[in-house]
Image (cartoon, rainbow over all chains, first blue to last red; front, side):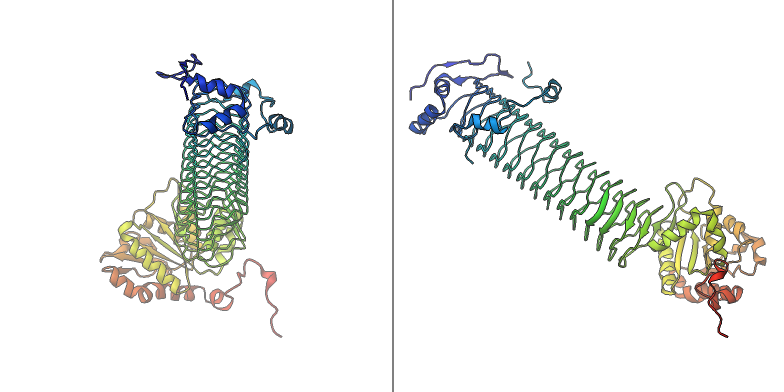
Amino acid sequence: MVRGYQVVTRPDFVAGRVTVVADEAHLEIIRQGVEAWNRWRQDNPGAKPDLSGADLTDADLGGADLAGADLTEAALRKAYFGEAGKRDEAALKGGYVSGANISQSELRETLPRRQT
Amino acid sequence: VSGANLSGATLFKADLRQADLERADLSGADLRGADLAWAWLAGAHLVRANLWNANLFKAELTGADLTESSLWRARLIEADLTRADLDTAKLKGADLRRAVLAETRLTNADLREADLAEAVLTGANLTGANLTGADLHGANLREAVLREAHLHAADLRRANLRQADASHADLSGAQLYRANLNRVQLSGANLAGADLYRAYVRADLSGADLRGADLRRAVLIDTDMHGVHLTGARVHGISAWDLKGVPADQRQLVITPEGEGEVTVDNLKMAQFVYLILANEEIRDVIDTLTSKVVLILGRFTEERKAVLDALRDELRDHDYSPIVFDFDLPADHDITETVTLLARMARFVIADLTDPSSIPQELQAFVPDVAVPVQPIILQDQDPWSMFPDLKKYPWMLEPYAYGDLTTLLVDLTTRVIEPASAKREELHPAMDGKQPSRPPGLAPNFSPPLPP
């Protein structure tokens, strides 16, 4: 596998002195969808996926093989990690939480995320 | 598991709020500091996952497998962990306030200092779990299994433990103020020094250790007390009904409220009875005529003199008497004369140890002229106690003081020189009442006289 150049995908994601960066090549593959991703994983069993700091908000990652992946500080809010191709079904049966009505007061109750 | 495979993945500080991780494989994943608020983790595989400091506020974790996971200081406020498996999970200092842990498996989990205030733990299995210092106040533990759980110094105030099984659990020093212990299995449990003030206890306490426990104002109903260790428990205002079985030991039960001179008795039923009389003026009048087996012991029983007290108790019990001890060594913050007089009136006789006597001669002077009860003074060394209360010599129920050289001598002479003279004097003073009608207080209920044979 040819290792792509690295970019700071989320420059705002700075935790302490460590700037979190993802492997842009890996990022491109995951953006093509779970099928492509899993195929790539199969072809490259030795590769260690680096998706640290990646923005995968609301992504459908149902059935994705992310074993051993580095997702440090990744933005995975509302992302789907259930069964492959069942995201809509999950949303319908109420399993998927993105539709849940969460008040602002409840949001404030949670831990503040990154301190800047 | 049929969701995404995230086993061994690093999700350190990842933002997973509202993420759907249903049945995902997160075994061994690094989720330290991850934000999983409102995340859907039903049936997720989190075996050996590291969730240190993770935020799982209102997360859905029903049926999740969290075996051996690390949740040290994780925030699980209002999370739903119904039927989840947390066997051997590390939850020290975790925040589980109002979390739902119904039928959750928490066997051998480390929950030390965890905050479980108002959590729902109905039917949860906490066998062998370590809840030392945990906050469980207002928690619902109905039908929970707490066998051999460590609950030392746990806060269980107002907790509902109805039908829970806490047999052989360590509840020493636990706070159970107003806890509901209805039909709780507590056999072999350690409740030494526990605070059961105003608790409702209808439990199997057989073989439980309640030494020094605070049972003030506790309600004990239909409770199995077989083999219970109760020595030194505080029982002021206790309400005990239909107790079953015989406690293993029940010495020195403190019947007075805190801050008053300590009155101790050696029997829970006696404790209730004596307390009733002390607390209710209306029924005091019956005491004069009551045939009792009470022997009042007055003395200053410092640590080194406790042997004398123990010898007196044992000997009196052997003679089928019920000793009540008024220990003058403990400070009283109000006038004790009335209490002493009352106890003297209900006693068959009084043993007053005048060694290092403090206010005992004064107390004797207060009741001896009015109460015709034999008083047997005893004193260490060869001194004349009459010098302490010269006026009392004229009363026939004041017996000749018995001076003992040492404890061994006292033990040898106790029956012949102390108990027998006092008993004999009692017979002499009240032969009709004690001899002929031993079980019925005549002044109390004359209408209940048995019909005389023609």
